[in-house]
Image (cartoon, rainbow, N blue to C red; front, side, top):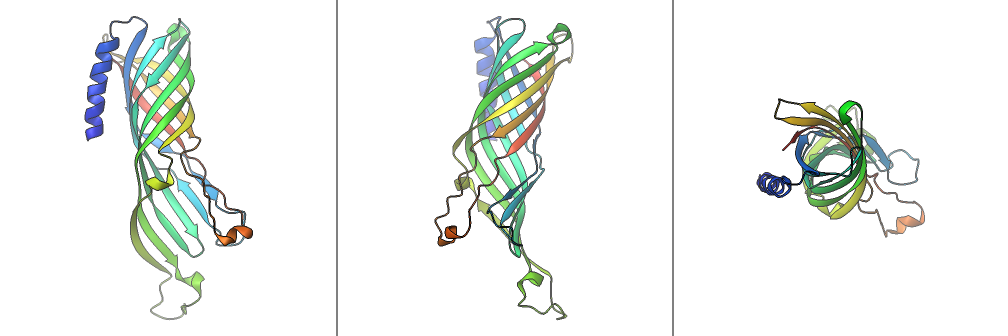
Length: 245
């Protein structure tokens, strides 16, 4: 909740500071953020049970106050400071054991973009930019599932046999992320009108992280036989609605 109080104060301050400048406008956008599914093979092995992480779609949220500076009728710059909660459904598998849970990554993101305005009345806008992200916290919670039939130490014909055993887990994974990381994005906006005095826009923004996850630098002796790989960097999609203030 303290993050939202911070943004309310920030919105009020920036709106007051820039409202007298005819070349600048202030907006507030919010909406869901969707994680894009991916599969990361963590070694160069092709044997059954090799370590891998599968990421499935999940829904988070974002709140993005931003300032637009108009260069001319066709081009502008956007600068923002936003709060993002990226959520990922993950399956981290090694042999007969898999961790199935949800990751919640809280961060402050600072995006900057260069935009082209087009269409009738410049109603459409496409922008390309980059962002810096500051990790606030990252946690994962779920179940550790063991497939007993793959272990071979239990007789599956035993009437008490259970194919899966499950243990819940919850862990802090902030150490797995770089505290400051960078990425790039493509965004598309469509201007809309709420009323005679209130205008806004619909936003679609695709984010690709470059170095959010730390490298998998294992120093184990097993490195003589296997090449360890890094988990793929996350990609997310923001779908939001904005209000010009």
